[in-house]
Image (cartoon, rainbow, N blue to C red; front, side, top):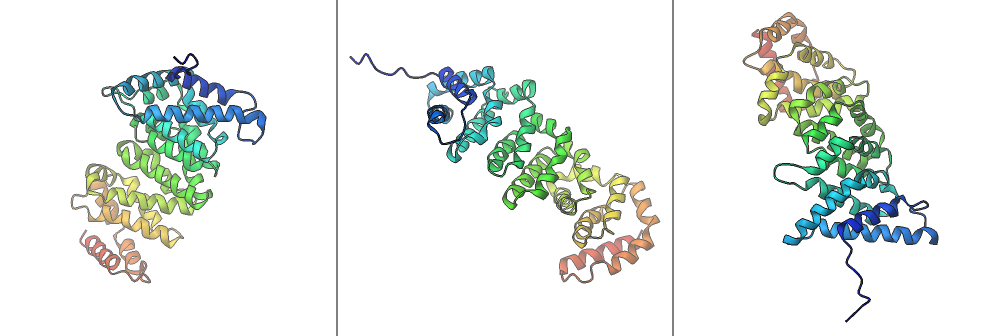
Length: 319
């Protein structure tokens, strides 16, 4: 009999061990002996927690439930997110898998990790968005943010916050890879949660930043032209202020912005059931629009664009 057999650590032991290792004074990524032991312990706990979350078998479900409950009790999630930069490259990937694994845990129709964040730690969403300012960890925090934004409750928190308007800043100022990730997350929240998005999104369309304006217009056009979004498209093109915005953007100093605005504007004109207020605006500006469209982007060698432009000219002439 082996009296010295190591006792298997429980989910409670692992979570508390990881939390204590992260919060221990002097812990961090520096390569010195005083920190190495603490960091090694944190890494071992990360790997053990990940193994439970992604294991299989009936016994694992109970372990995951214990793990999740202790994670909530100790507030490990915000601690992991706040300290992700302390870990090395491989351990950061473990952090992402652990947080995302917990976000995917479902009990019946409920999502306990989502409920926990909404009730106690909304700030982690903003921490993840602010993660785009750190090139070293931005793609890690971006992956966690993307998983969170799949849940309407969490997306709503971001959409209705002032921090939402930091998306364009990160899209415009970060490196190419980080910028693409930020835009992918912006697209995730706007397209997955369409009913909520327009009020929060339209200010981006009139941004003073050229890149933000162009990308936002392009995304708006994609959303409106997607057959799956017919009801949303119908509501959008029934609003006078939306038409007026597109008519203004058709005269933007940037040709790229003009081109993207055209693809949104054409939806208003092509609508066979225009609301009276929309038709009135088009009729009132008929001559100006015809003059503008006849000379609009004649330098562009694109047969489809030329056909669409001619179609709009005919539709406006018939008003």
